[in-house]
Length: 29
Image (cartoon, rainbow, N blue to C red; front, top):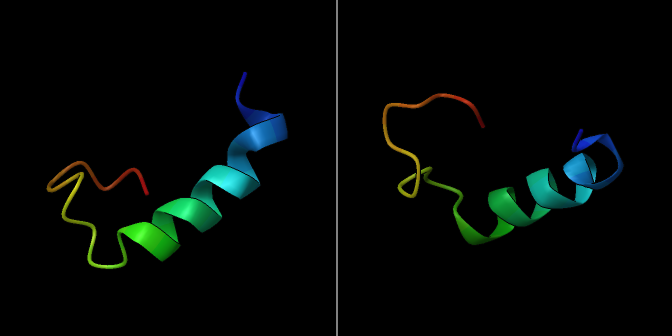
């Protein structure tokens, strides 16, 4: 479902939230 955008999303997530504080405990990123 998200495959076409997933790489861009993952890169943005890593850039803007390197510590993973926006999704604590979820471990999906």
